[in-house]
Image (tube, rainbow, N blue to C red; front, side, top):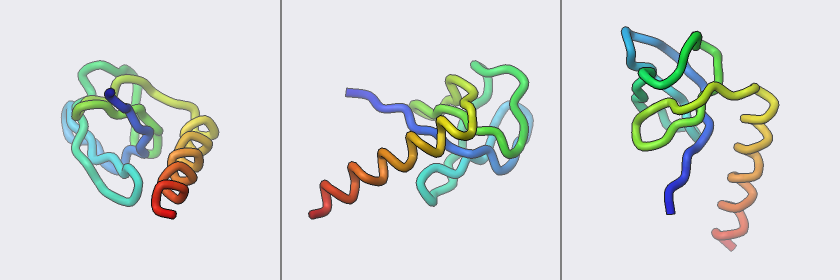
Amino acid sequence: MCLAVPGKIEAIEGLTASVQVGGVVVRARLDLVDDVQVGDYVLVHAGFAINKMDAAEAEETLALLGEVQRLADQ
């Protein structure tokens, strides 16, 4: 199973962004998304930003993923 996760763009250099995902900064290519800027949320899968996300939706998804992790750690 594959999973894409939301992350917040912290910096952009050409077609590569530094994206904060769950407290970790990862590099993600921006070839597949248009009109993104620092502060935007994107859905990251396999090193690529595949979709721009609404901030509220991204934060809700991150909260749900955090709850899943908390339950798994019990």
